[in-house]
Length: 261
Image 1 (cartoon, one colour):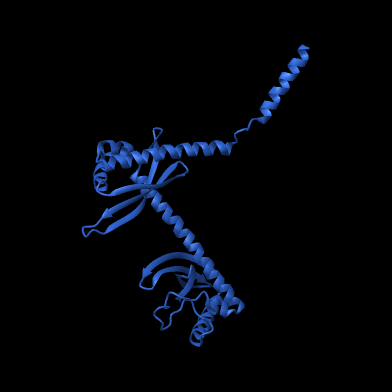
Image 2: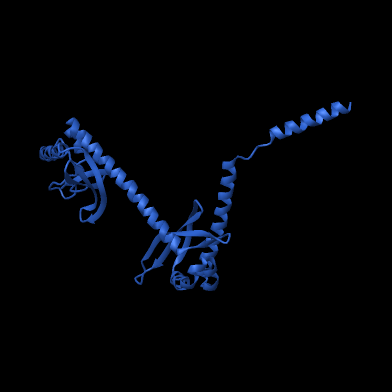
């Protein structure tokens, strides 16, 4: 009888254990991240509230220690603006808040910008850091530039492939219009069915063929320049022994060749 009761109890415990949901490592990480996000959100909102109330002594307590001395003047300038936290997300150990700053110009026109406010862990608490915010912006700009350079390179490669195949009609869709129509100039791609534009496309494709004939194409350096035509996205390349430049423009959700040097 005792043995039967013990066996029943063991079976019940076993079934209970099997029914329990075991927390996985990703679940634990997500919980920690959610908790950190809530704490950071509370901190940045308290910081904004203190700035709005012009309570700068309290506001600086939400700033990392090494920046507190220089922070007050900047906070005083911010207090004349309408500050709103739009969102906050975690990027590793960093908490990144999107904060809107609204200001009114002397003529009554409202202006607004959205900036990244980065919070870092200091002595177990999240603190606002101007230095970390600047570094984050720089890193984000570098990532965006890397993504853009890769996208531009992909468009150049697509154009080169079309030229190699002799598909000038297809290539026209990756070559910027430079004709007399001011509405379309630098804002549209070529139309191969137009006689004038066909001549220009064919001429450009022949120019590309000559570059390809020089030897293997190697991408060297990417840069961007803003001019009247728009933002020029420039890849310097080496073809054989010679260096060339493919200058692209953002047109119709893609990139099109504007010039070759």
